[in-house]
Image 1: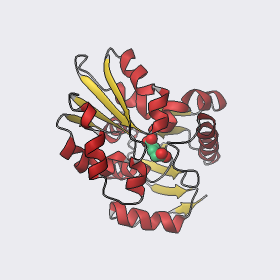
Image 2: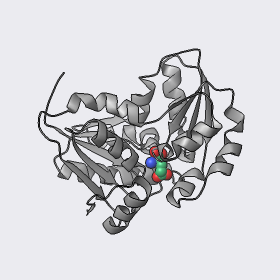
Image 3: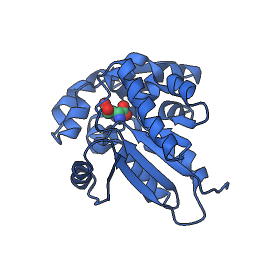
Image 4: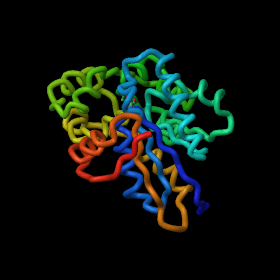
Length: 246
Ligand code: DGL
């Protein structure tokens, strides 16, 4: 296996990024990993393309200033809207978007794949295009515009989700196209019988190649209020970590 000591930047609009971060630090403890959560500007999912691109360009500038050149965009909304723009502004950065990471690992061209996501991700058709490019043509995209708010506010999404998922019960696979959604994986499992794919496993598979041969270090950084993020992580993820401001 290729081994190196590079630091990986993990970018998300907010708290959902911690679901990916937690998974990675548990499964790849030697990875050097820096999570940047743009909580000041979150949620992104209902904002305009231009606003999402501007927020993302600022975030990439932060990573660049830290000397971090390998960046995983965990946020599906950013991956669907801003990849072309940021690659143009930062050609020297190695930026990997979650949508292509996820679809590139999917097989089964006869599957019917449903994708649930924010409104912006749905509107962009990024998952549908990416799945079509891989020969998977039976794709249904379903926006869940209110779900991030349920999760952020720690409200029970059961009733909302049961109703929302009714139209996609025929699908064989469900992609959770938003970093927040793995937080309520058990609720999705209650209301969907097929295979469920989320962002964490595809990112894990790619970042395995970045494991270092010494103890990894981690940092959690927010553009919002570090004390609040620390409390949110305690409540939602049952972990106490140091959170830095920018
Ligand atoms: N992190 C975003 C995503 O994966 C969702 C949260 C937001 O709306 O900012 O799409």
